[in-house]
Amino acid sequence: MGGKTKEIVKKRYSEIASNEGCGCGPSCCSPLGTNAAAVSKSIGYSEAEINNVPEANLGLGCGNPTALSQMKEGDVVLDLGSGAGFDAFLSARRVGKSGKVIGVDMTPAMVKKARANAAKHGYSNVEFKLGDIEELPLADASVDVVISNCVINLAPDKDKVFSEAFRVLKEGGRMYVSDIVLLKELTAVQRKDDELISGCVGGALLRDVYLKKLEDAGFKVSILGEDKDIGGRQYGGIPLESLKIEARK
Image 1: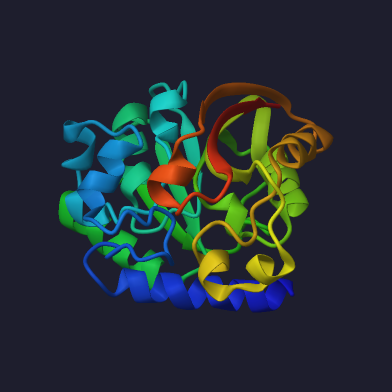
Image 2: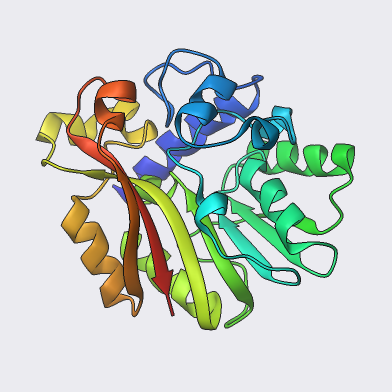
């Protein structure tokens, strides 16, 4: 099932990358049926952040992990599922020229788009890698901060994602995540629905299961926020929430 899930996700996000913005039907992570800027404003981005590299904002998030994080000058930051680079570019401004941001995404079209955006806007401290967040192309203990925005729910094997994030973080490193978690189990039909799978719901975990998997990977977890209205606002009333967390190694 994992391979099929990845193909569904990759196909959908390749389609999104080929367009300017999400277009937001129910197949993407923020299905407001409106433009990417409105989506981003609704989940916590400022006007300045939205306008930083506007073509990198595809309206795919469920929170603003860069705002939650404690990045500083010189940090090495990893963005899991970096898409067109929206959060990576915001992070690059925080870490400065002495820092570095590495974005990893499994969709070639997204990586291509992100690299073009970096070149266009002069972000020399950002690198985008084609790779799977279940098998990160990074060395052990090589990053200070990991961020992810509404992506881990798309990965079939969350245990591997969390163990890989733990592996690449330095001792004392932090992970900041905004992600969709379920408040009630889905039906079997919903779990197999391609639209829900690519729309950040079909593969999501129950809230407490998600948190336990993080702890089992070795993280000390703190909940920074819970958007319990997002289900009604953006997901047609499905009982879910956007969970904002800090996980420390």
